[in-house]
Length: 200
Image 1 (tube, helix red, strand yellow):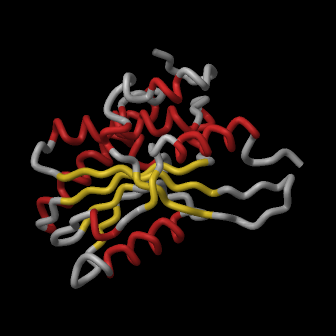
Image 2 (cartoon, one colour):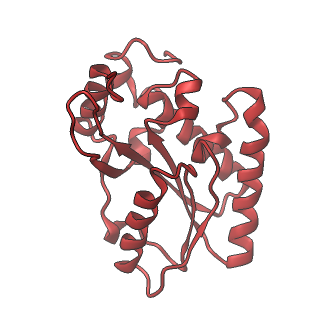
């Protein structure tokens, strides 16, 4: 059977962790206020782990778990405005729903998610780094639409490998904004992986 994660995928993920582009989530540094709006993919095989993780984080940072979820296939990167045209409506819907949610709930913190492997990303020929870049594009677009929001990005990984027969090793990483702010900050990884959809 074909492994879900190629050797290239594994190497790329390892490199992103080594470079500090994926880091462990530290609840005490997230500074969650009155709750959060999360924008993950609605993938039924991954959502439970994503939600359980952030619910656990909230227990360490707020008095009550106020997690308002805006989920669509593709997750936060739908708002990047760089996917195929038929996905533009989903991106617009997610953006409007997030802005409406923060106003209704009085929440200022928004967490955007992407995950790997992701069927929507695969359909667009996106690799791990491309997904991270698209998620950051989505963050910038949301920030332009709602400047007062505190927006953070997270990457969920399912390291299951059919070939190795390993169990599902799921983990959510935080994406530090200073490491993903522009292509210049990505040069160490962009120079190594030449088969990205978008190149410097």
